[in-house]
Image (cartoon, rainbow, N blue to C red):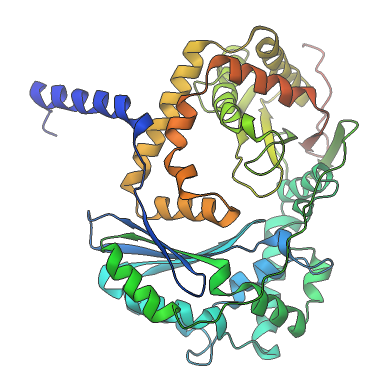
Length: 455
């Protein structure tokens, strides 16, 4: 490989410095938007690096919107949307995408459902045509839904019922949310999925699969004006639906910490996970969300984090340890910490070591240098997002689907850059003062979570 010249290195360093100086004041994606008369919001991010586009349709409906006793409907539709319509035969949707050299997928969360295709830019109109068709013209029959019901139930068996970590995660989540529908698994409870009727599915579809409950994201090698014209042509005539009011779900006070243990012979390495309620953009102390993102990065955000350096490298009692936090939710978020015990060590040792590090932070705080380094890492990730066609569609779509504005995404680097060490330390203290905590332990049949004699 040819080595870069000193001039090239010098120019690269200058560009990097310019990016670091300006990123806090720059927009990330610079999207262009319009809203059709039927309520469909259209967002375009132009990226002319390759003659490809990602066409992504987000519906503002997820598992938390399902009627009581009807869990799994939102995810069920992730499957049913690939069945036939009045114009397209069963299974033909995927064949059309494949014949045109495209890739497709879909996913469901508690807050939204999304469908996307990545194709050559010249095929965008065709993708809009078939996606708009299945927005309102899905041909739901008993013959169509029964095979997919079995697929969903088999997926549940594979991902949860036959997975020790899946079983434990489902129970821990159910324990964390005492009242909020986030407690119900996205894939649904098996007995409720089995009993979903054709009437249940049709009512859900007619209510939520409508232009005024959707956001269209197009990212790639195409001009925004052309996207707007195509969107009006293919989606513009679809009638909106009457959307129901959404309940304002609230969690009651959590009075004590709860522990859940699950044992299975399949488990080789014991795992401890701590989940605690945390604020989101729309729930709780939302002023803490930026500070907690920085705190999570400092505490357990990779090999340079406090937890990894102390517990994996120095103490050598865990093979893996870390933390996570994502405030991009309609309801309450969670702050998670996990540790995988090293052979011969116990989860209790790992948990104690983690909380020793947390106590240090609560008592002494994180340092200004740690906060500065974390901010730079996180702002750099925003720059890297520009290199992808799918990432902008995911970031903007997720934000808009939960009710955020484009400015919330575009201003994120500046907002995270304004957080100081005092804000991070204060947010961490508030987080760990609360008792809305669930500890879960995944163990083998003969493994123990208690302290080792050699601790």
